[in-house]
Amino acid sequence: MIKRALTMMLPLGLALGGTVAQAVPQIPEDSGWSGHVNLGVGVGSSESNMLASIGPADLGDDTISSLDEDAGSEDFALPFVQFELSYTLGETRTQFYLANQGGEFLNFDMETTLEAHAGVRQAISGIGRFDFSLLSTTIPTDVWEDPYQTGVARDDTERTNTGIRWAWDGIMDSNFGVEFSAKEIEIDDERAGESLALTDDERRMLRREGNVNRFNVAYNWTINEHHSLTPVLGYADFDLDGDAMAEDGLALHLKHMYNPGGRWRLASMIAYEDLESDDTNPIYGDEAETESFGVSATFFYDNPLGLEKWTANLSASYFDEDSNIDFYDASFGMVSIGLFRRFD
Image 1: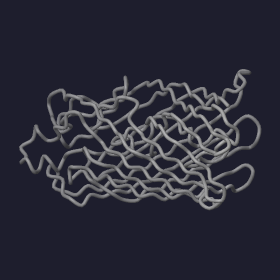
Image 2 (image 1 turned 45 degrees about the vertical axis):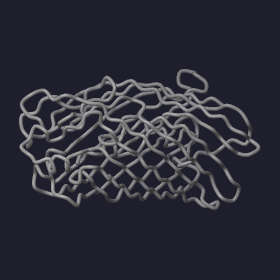
Image 3 (image 1 turned 30 degrees about the horizontal axis):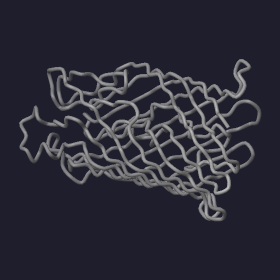
Image 4 (image 1 turned 135 degrees about the vertical axis):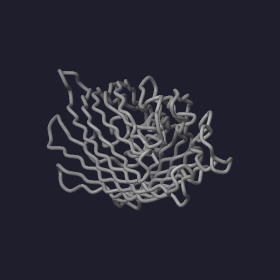
């Protein structure tokens, strides 16, 4: 099902510092405040039969004519603010932080991609760095109350995510890291299938609320002074209330950072996810099988126009999701530009 899509925010987790993203960033040895902010705007195009909007940006048609048609294309523009504010206790290597951060790479349609995190990080010599945070939706995301309603304008309703995230990076002074997140999805008015001639049990199979659990194992590999690479092997479990909507399977990411020295850097990522459902969809009479593929690249340039401590960033992203049930096919593309400033 259309449960994953490319993040609409810049992949700043790919590290403005010049290395590939780590699940837990380095913690300063000195006490005090630090943080960063990124201000920008993105423009793009979205195709989705399930998603209505995020913030002011419309991402799907409110009216469809049949349950067999491909999603229509919607153009959008979306401003964004991404930030982190943290305070470090240098003696204990403890850091408290509040941030809105990008989530998983292929999850936009079912999990809100930009999330507020309130958490604590801890570095322990010889053991590694730990991160625990509570997370919640930051930008209102709307889905259709009944995405299968045809011939009339569909009503939208808000979807929210709440949960926890835990990560351990630099395990026992190695390059390995692990990350686990557990989120609960809630939809204000879940009416999937109410417009169709289905039984109550069949309608319940289409419910999109429930839990999403992800577990990732990463290896941060510094190839040389210019190139860093991080392969990520993950497992995703969409344990949703609707058995026909529940899926699980393998996720693969590959992140690369190129830093030639000087004022510019290039971060890129490719991602693949293969999920399957164990139960038959009551509308289409088949078990859903979904393959998702996404790519992203971000160019960073320090001190643009003489602005010290600022970094310009230009990002391009594309996502495609292919389901054996055509109604759930989706695609998404965006180009965004922003200005990043670190405070320390």
